[in-house]
Amino acid sequence: MSEAPQQPQAAPSFEACLEELEKTVRELESGELPLERALELYEKGVALAETCRKQLEEAEMRIEILMKREGRVQPEPFRPDRS
Image (cartoon, rainbow, N blue to C red; front, side):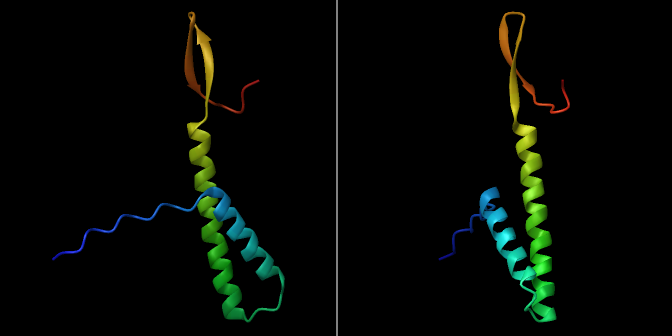
């Protein structure tokens, strides 16, 4: 019998990544770490920060505002630089 293919794991939520990043930063800031552990945590923090950044960018692209044009309401990409 063959094994069923494994489903890719869903990426952790933004909130979970942010919480893990905050935990990592607190541990780094303790100052009581051996160098090797500090380097591991730093690398982990960089990866978590990148994941959070990507998730924020994706969310920003998905945000839409509704504009009324020609009597119809239509979605339009959100652009925060509008006045």
